[in-house]
Length: 306
Image (cartoon, rainbow, N blue to C red; front, side, top):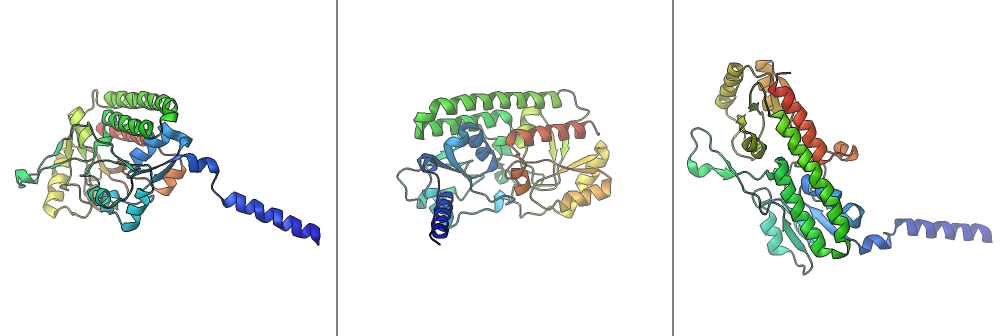
């Protein structure tokens, strides 16, 4: 009986120790990011030196996200919070106004990037123009974001500065390689028009390579729906240009793209904006680089009507 009691006590202590957080984890800084690209950049640069959390649950569309009181408390308990910009996360002002923390470092990862305007559609007024928040979809902008993240990590955790710098240098080289892949895609395509059946996020990529974007949507709101007239006009234009691919966005039902594909016989292809990923993508090891490389292949096939 005594041996049984001792065995039970030992087992119970092992369970308790297994459930308790490791002491080393408590020594790590805590980093929270708003979107997947920043999450992935921190993951590449800091690796196991930080406790890292993606604020958005897997599969959640970020444009409809808003900060709750619990969100603010969670961010307030972190050492670093990294967001994109006030256009992408308009709720950040609520966080800044309400967080009660003397240690929290809030990082606007887009700082230093030159914004472009999302041009107004025909019939819209000039004042309807808005800045495009999707800066990360240009690999060179992604380098600026990664640098901002690196600077924040080093400022909060200087003891690991060399580790962070080494990993960031490797990431910068990967982003340069990614840029070179896109240079090759757009070197000599049969056309340079992207038909997109969603709220287009690739404005910075289009701006760098002189691409034309045609979409029935205006603006970036996921709640806005295109007019029937806009869909008809896009179908007509697609037929005139003999374009065989229509792209659609992640995490949203591609009903508009589906209608256009049915009317034109075009192939539907996902062009991933990398705002967020699904649980399956996260478990499969998706990264910003892997998503963007897959996009490059899809764009190349689309431009060549493959």
